Length: 300
Image (cartoon, rainbow, N blue to C red; front, top):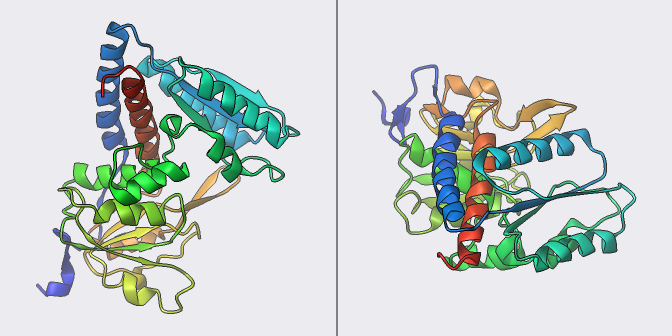
């Protein structure tokens, strides 16, 4: 067997091993449920507040999923739904009310918000310690410096997914295709940190680089994080590589991933089109929320 056919501990055999996110999420949510039970036994009900602006069906659906999950785990889940015509000041006022409510431990402003509103400005109003998305500038700074704080959910979910499925990361060459603030950049920082489930040699490349496939073809672990449907095709993947589809776009209700499904014929292991990174992202949201509740209760 040629060395080019072996990468990241898996071998390409024509059909890649699937790396589903569901079992990872179940494990994480089981740990969260145990922490919630301990908090409630101590007289603390963890609370995750949500804010929805406008009437986007997909966004409303995501809020319902999170509220249903909150109820199953034993979280309180206060919710504010603002009209699509709400002003920036209206949105800031809701966030500030949740900031000042000691009974609320985490706050999620569902993205996207209507075009006349500035999500980044709203995010900066949020108390960084209640930022369950891990996207506040303070929390991104904590990540860059290796300080404790809530981690961006999709990057943290990808690290957990690789660890759960026994994909070795430490010392491997990881290429992240995409440099966005929500996934590509924070994932690169996370996987480069000195930790058994990270500690990789990470390269970030993007579509502004004319010959980006030159980088992806050498990756032992390739993470697509662009949001361009089907951009990663078999000719862009090293034989036997681990391929993680992190970037997606929606066409109505249909999910369009960055990674073309034909890549399974070249990769050694790959996330499925549906049920890959998505479930782990939601699980990490609740992991951040219960950690926030523990901190607020003085329990670490």
